[in-house]
Length: 141
Image 1 (cartoon, rainbow, N blue to C red):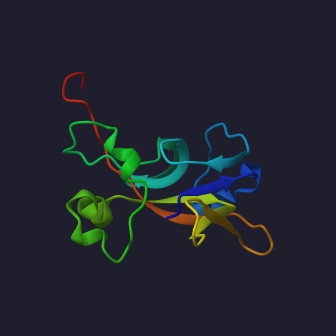
Image 2 (cartoon, rainbow, N blue to C red):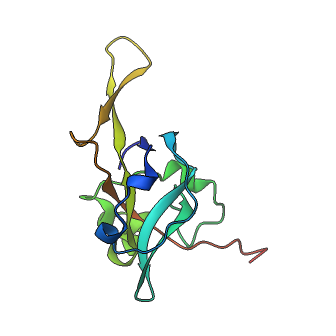
């Protein structure tokens, strides 16, 4: 996935296209970074649902949820090779509605990078692929 994305028109989300009937309350968001709560569409126990979850995968075996911030992206061609993503890649995939995502290009001789916005020409909402995992703190459950 990307490092930042946008969902500016949640009301334009075609529910039937995603196989859902309801959405949680949403507001337009113009700069969604990792560790934010994001809208995902996923199947759980045979039911397709849309809900808000935290962006940043925390493996079920992790001791600390702060690892999720560092695991906001995974390459599909290497996800099955990495223990952190393997189980989620095999069993827990989701869709992340967006109307824009950003890719970044290094600027020679500078520490900053230049963002490029990527969108569908007609502005339609599309989906990014995602993985999800369930995590609970051992101490508090």
